[in-house]
Length: 253
Image 1 (cartoon, one colour):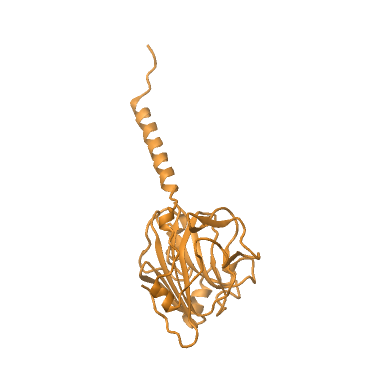
Image 2 (cartoon, rainbow, N blue to C red):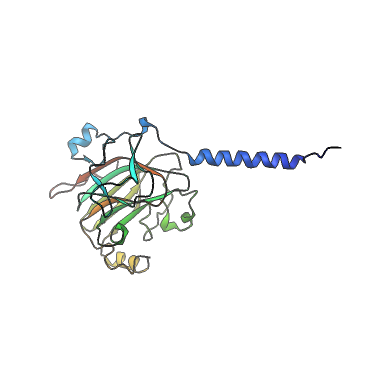
């Protein structure tokens, strides 16, 4: 009599195969060209917004420590994309007081970040810059620390609730930096608010992983950056509105 494979092994193997297939599909998020809209509306143009990325070139950006952008970052279907290891991406121009708007989509289990007011005085922009966390809050291991979840002022202020959208969906960011005051907003909800250099900020700083970085959070002007944290991430609709003297903030949508 021929040996027969037990049914539980057959069904078990099938279940594992289906599970792996579903995981593979979830990891392959991707973007379609119609998603990657990088244009100002007529109203935004009249309000003084400027594009930091037009979907065609990276002329406003360069790789950290380099004069131009290396192959780690590029354009995929019209979105600004982390393609392979290339280090953090930073703006060629420095900004002091501004409003920043952008959208991000993260890969399954992915991690990235948005930096403001950073420079190249250390080995990475994170030595000086404030970071708004970009994370898959369901799949990345760092989700267990509330101050490391999407929308957080990384390692400093945890969002009071999860405002992020899951893998496969776009998340909208608004950041304002006006003199010492900074706010992070994710999908229409404020996730962090602080005054740079205040007693409250200093208390957070001394309790954080940045406490041994003497120049961290000390700049009132600097580059905007996008973090290379080894994972695939897409950005679109990156636009900035410089708050010169006499220009008032518009605020989030």
